[in-house]
Length: 333
Image 1 (cartoon, rainbow, N blue to C red):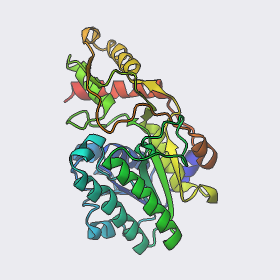
Image 2: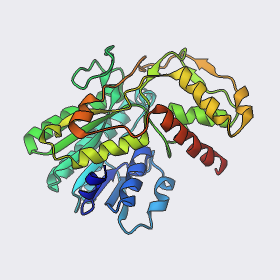
Image 3: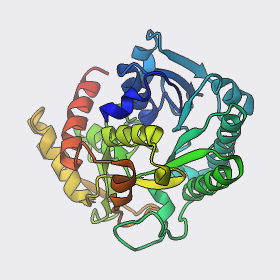
């Protein structure tokens, strides 16, 4: 991936949602490799602490702005070469409770970014799509051109993003690449709140000697994907010169199927190295969540072929790295 990074050294990238989990990791990685970065975030779900260490970097600019405001998007796009669009309101349960808000941010906000990119003559936009787009499709592994019906408002919004991307690429000659993330986890992922993702929530519960709760019987499976794999996919998509790779969507995952209960027990076992009492914590089970899919597994063959994507971390390697980061985080906060 180093050769791809060389192509970005004289570029200026806009990372929307740059104070969030994925966005802040992208910002940090790009800055470490001497890429100029502007971060746009309204701090609703993003956090200043995620980018605090970046503020003193001369190549970094933070804009406290909202993608639902077209003027904010237009201002953020000044002098930008490439956009990495990560801003969104995540969480299936949150979208079920408030579909209006999810629609406004994920669809209207995305449209604003595309329109601002067009107005600013920004050719390449890489955007965060979602595995939720596969909906009720039972087929495994998930292949990009075979999707089902959406199961949540969130899934609808992420599918509409792909539809808008297709229209903008054909009408306005933009280069748009969608990355369907599969259950991303890793450093800086928020462990707090009702809509926290599974892995940091599980780790937090164990560290506090509280029973982590699995929604369902634990037999559901996911293709958990470490943050460094997502960073790699974004860089590859931002720099690809393969004409066949442009105006496509790609699964970004490990291509590994993890049973949730097995993963939770593995996390507990890893945490024992820091505190043996964690071994005594019991796992609890709750009702299945509305809108959740039972099984998920990605085919990553398209991304391998078109983008030269090759996950740097499998699930276990990612979990080990995440466990160490979270242990340090909880002990210092």
